[in-house]
Amino acid sequence: MMAILVPLAAMALVFGIVYLMKKENLAMIEKGMNPKIQRPAPYTSLKYGLLLTGGGIGLLLAYLTDVAVPAINGEENSSIYFALIAIFGGMGLIASYRIEKKEVLDKGVE
Image: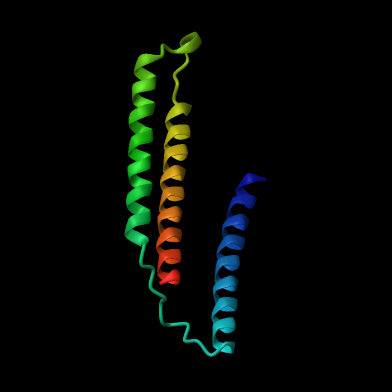
């Protein structure tokens, strides 16, 4: 049963992505925009930088917690790595959003 569902899900995913991209391109053409021209993303490096910094801090704290706290019932504390990387990576993205929002509002006021 799984041998059939996995390829079907993969094909449905590819079909959905292609369908949505075509639909977006058609909507842009209807509005008179050129879908080939990419819009600039001025804060991309800030976003990735804060995401990776947050992930690194989360990884460091997970390691320190793993070393400091003994394993419970002989089980490893591996889930803490994923949790802290996700939490601090998300905090980095939130910080990026706030910085971008502040810059946009400051430019709008002037």
